Image 1 (cartoon, helix red, strand yellow):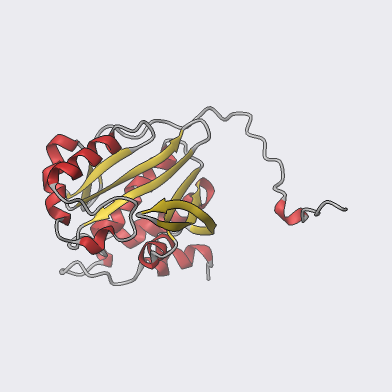
Image 2: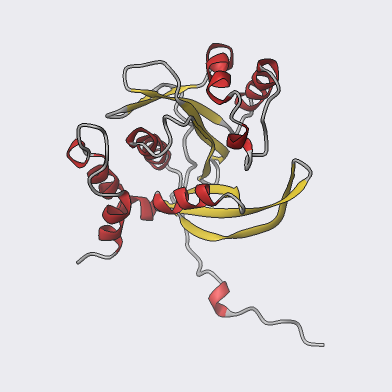
Length: 239
């Protein structure tokens, strides 16, 4: 019997990294943008307000491995345990110069030694979704991660979560594949879609983000004049 042969296309070339030292720790201070601020999430301080944002919105939790929560105590317990994880850093999302949370997101699966990090726990209220503030919140996390020396940033989602997959693509992440039977969530199988962005890709995409988020790209009501996809497309396929 012959062993199956591995196609050369599946074998990555050797890439030496003689100067690699490790990526840095997630920011422990607020991250400020033009329209939004990301403030380190403090469970006792922010938990009650965050619980109220999503109370009664069972659809919000459909594709997440946690929630909905029956009461505030249950949510607070989950939040405190999640914030305490050593590979996780969560931030509330606020309008700039405000401390009223509109949602939260952050880093998870941080591996400094390999320079790998994931943007996860994306919980945006209805008022935050599909806004300039939401896009800038993701931009600020990407910018901070790559400035800290991370080489790879991931976005993972339930294979049934079409909205999250579309968001990943819109933000410039590349689809890598599906982890089959990756989790058991709420007594059902979950396949997980994996998207990624590498440091070299970010360097090319960053100016497109800056152009999209510029004040001139939004009207007085905050509506975008040109979508992010157009700016990213110009970077990837210059005229």
